[in-house]
Image (cartoon, rainbow, N blue to C red; front, side, top):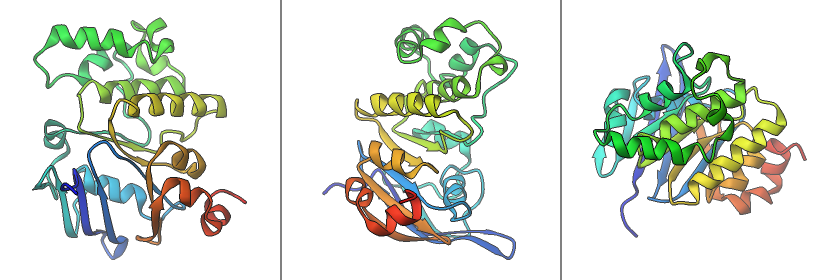
Length: 238
């Protein structure tokens, strides 16, 4: 099998004396959809922040497309093809929806193609189409999540990283967000998803890692873990 697009080896993350991530080993091949699930405080978000250069890793290595990216700053990782939609969305509230979308493509030089892609993307996000010239801060939580996702896609990432896309959203909006994620990934997008709603995460991905107290406790095909008694009891409320 070819080398993984992303390979995380023995990753550790510390906040002073607190070790948030004890040892994370994870890999994703091009075109795969992988989820990292676990309880609050398991170390999922810390792992993503270390991956995307937002906090330093204290040990281990992170390799992307054959090169080590451990502690490479976030803006440089975007150039290399990693786009992250953080928990809390991180949109530019005072800018219009359109300006937010254009900001997602700021590294690109093919402006005509960008305009065409924005038009195409809006077909997946009809709510945004109606509010294109409104300030992004006036959107609902679900619409802001859709905007953050659309903006990330406009950077044409090789790896899309989503941190808790359902956080704080009404159930109907969560359903819509995951429909869009599924649609986007059906075109071959490589995905790493961290999500509190384990059932939805397992339904839209190929493989899964279960994180517990800073380490991986279980891994396997998402469909298999959906039927695993231990996973169902701990994360699916059954």
